[in-house]
Image 1 (tube, rainbow, N blue to C red):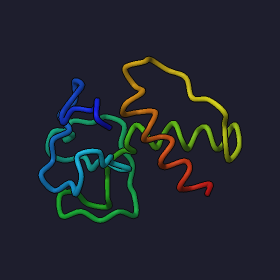
Image 2 (image 1 turned 180 degrees about the vertical axis):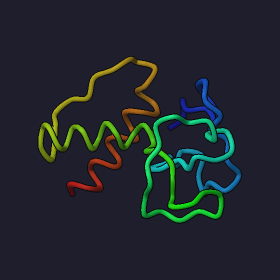
Image 3 (image 1 turned 90 degrees about the vertical axis):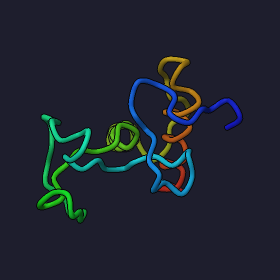
Length: 101
């Protein structure tokens, strides 16, 4: 956590509504900076910004969902670039551990 920086990376992750800078999104609505997103789906999530919760999953939840579906409830290692260790990998661990106990 000490090495993480608010807004690090190419994406604009600043959001004054976050309770903590390390919080991550499970779902992005097709609105604002994501209004032009091409791959979107209806969802049960509610937003005043879009109808029928249209949006797309946060990139962390996609990997966790695919890993769980294809490899089981727990895995021993998650691979990827070292630049993803402080954010992507730690977020995947957090949500996967929360889902699997």
